[in-house]
Image (cartoon, rainbow, N blue to C red):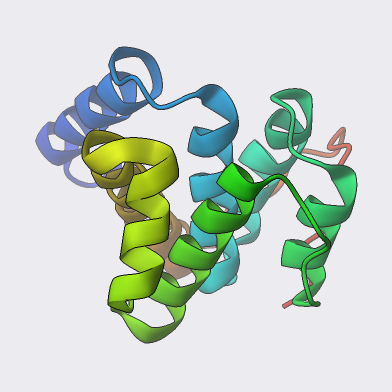
Length: 147
C-alpha cells in the first residue's frame, strides 16, 4: 500500500479504529486476526498477532492448532463459538444459521459484526502482504506459519 499513500492512510485509520475503538475484547480481536491470517496463509499477519493472541488469553494449544491446521482442542464455549464462526466463514465464505446464532449468543450482534470486520480487515492486510515480499523480523518469537 506504500504505492498509494492516501489509501494507506485510510487503511491505517480503519486499523486504529478496529484495534482501539470497538468493544470486542482483545483476545477476540487477536483470534480474528490469526484466523484471517491462516485462512490466506499470511505469514506477516500471523507473526504480528499470534504471540499477542497468546498474551491476550488465547490458549497455546488453540493457537498452535490453528497454525498447523489441526483439530482445535476443547476450549471455553465463547472461544469455541468464535473459532467455529471464523473458520467456517473464512473457509466457506458463509456460515450456517446455527453457527451464526452461536456466535451471536456469546458475542452479541455487535460483537459478531466486529469480529467479522476484524477478520475482513486482516484479510485485506494479508492479501497486500502476500502480494509483496515482506521480510519477517529476525527476533520473532512465534514458529513460522507453515505454508
